[in-house]
Length: 303
Image 1 (cartoon, helix red, strand yellow):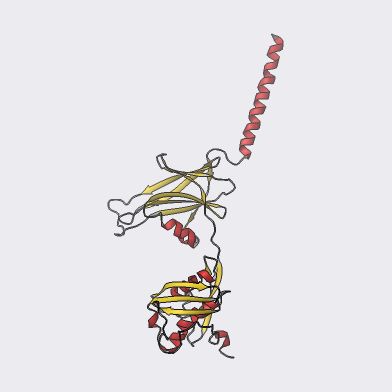
Image 2 (cartoon, rainbow, N blue to C red):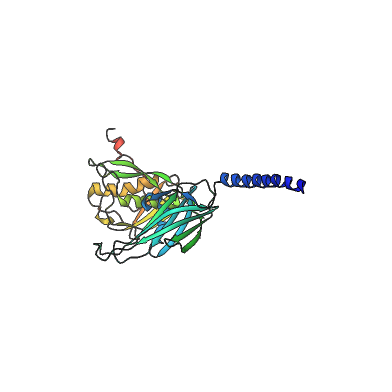
């Protein structure tokens, strides 16, 4: 009996050591249950254009999303269409349990006597997880009274390639000035119309550069012929308002030069409302594809 009693402290010590080892291992894996995660609050407008467009489709109804973009985890919540201002949605108190993010969704409605905007609103919230060292797989959205609202797999959204483009805008003294712009796409001869969409938007540097295409100009169609290396663009809307010699030069050669700067495009055919026309206002012949003309480029004005 005496020998049996002497073994009990040894057994207890072994068990204690094993328990301590498991505890230390759990501390070191960075995934202990209930670990709090910091949140970085984001504006949707801060995100790349493709992410903005992706989220836009979900704001009309109540939705919860979780996605990985460039190694960062984002959580999104929307309340849908509300009849007035004063409604909001907040994401807070995020915790992690192994590979799952748990996050509280708080909704607030306007008070009875609150003064709010009398217009339809679409409350949304976007946050980024501050800790991206865990391989997150799911996100669970919980109400403030601890009820599960939605469980979402974390999907991956690929980055859209970007291109640095040079667009031709006008100057006060009648020359072209190049303006650099980041385009959320890889520009090729087949999709070069995206640059003309940017021209239609007008210059970003409005203090120095002038609009070259009338506001309201529309692209009706675009095609590229790889054999002839000719890009054909059909324009409508207010394009005919480009009047006078300088107005016509700005409109025509902002398009031709911008497109011809893309490798693979040698000439540009401009159509107006599906038809080949002689000119916009009698100064530049549009009956055939045009070569670029860089003589009006600002850098050349003293040559």
